[in-house]
Length: 397
Image 1 (cartoon, rainbow, N blue to C red):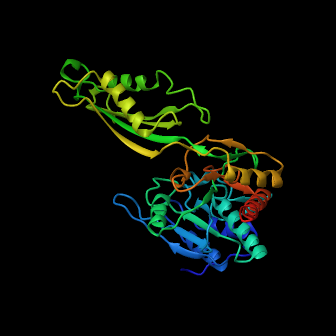
Image 2 (cartoon, rainbow, N blue to C red):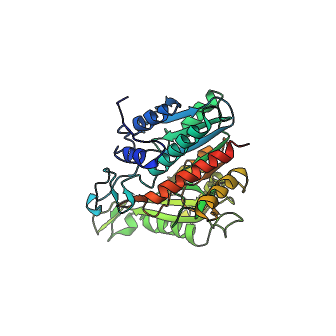
Image 3 (tube, helix red, strand yellow):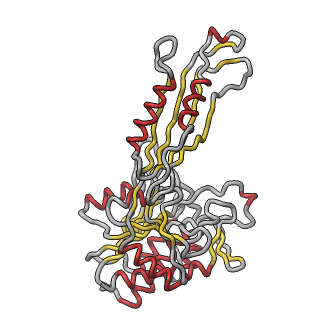
């Protein structure tokens, strides 16, 4: 592992800067995990690097680090990979320079979520300095380099690795930037599920002046898509907003105005609540397609085909011990009482919830994935205080 130098680990800024300066755009790591591993080992953590592979996907490196051997095992989960910078001309700073300007740390990953990782490490450094190494349990970090894209060689396989060792997590905070406007506004106690459909409707190519000699797939595709969105999937549930179905792409690949295409495709994404599962939605939508497609093509072959990508099921943890710990810490540090929410997209909590209770809480997310992504230094300090308070409270029992 290459030598990495990080300043005072009891303060979040030096480690956050060191991480941002590694341009770890998925699937590249660029030494980000080396930086984190060196920092954690200096605090006494035992680190395991976990590279995973799967055919058709990029190889991904991951890190599991644990301080202590006894239970309970309190885990912080996150990711060091970041999204691309997009149009670099839209940035007023170097996206990977980690500059501090007017009380804010700028850079890709400052909010999502290298800043959050640095806050937790700083909280642990403060906690261990005050309590010593025998604090009545274990603290662990589950850090992947595969969260921002397909999430195949990351957290899911790390959890399988833990189970194969007979190791478990008792409670987990995922450090995603959950706060919409101010630190302390919101924590996530559940997430909607996500299902993607890739629909292909087949026809027969021909001349637009002789449509009787062709079979245009576009009207069939439009009817099928219209049937998907003609009425809502549901009206919401006790803990979730209504499910949504959004059409993301429609394409026939046609560059001419006088050709009927031989196929038409569309992609749609469903974010669904606890009224549904991936299986129930696939059954429901397939029945709809079969009804609207009105049978096979003229030659008897199938009119359509659809491939499904299951990104995760909905899950929900009722307010309880973990959300209470975080809520008390947020109230103590910020004076705010965070909303308990299930809104937004999805995260690796969709995998972790099968092993232990999990809550998401991190920085303010207003600038995540945007140009000039940033986090305020005040928020970094306060999030560190919140994480430290959670550790103090958790290991007081």
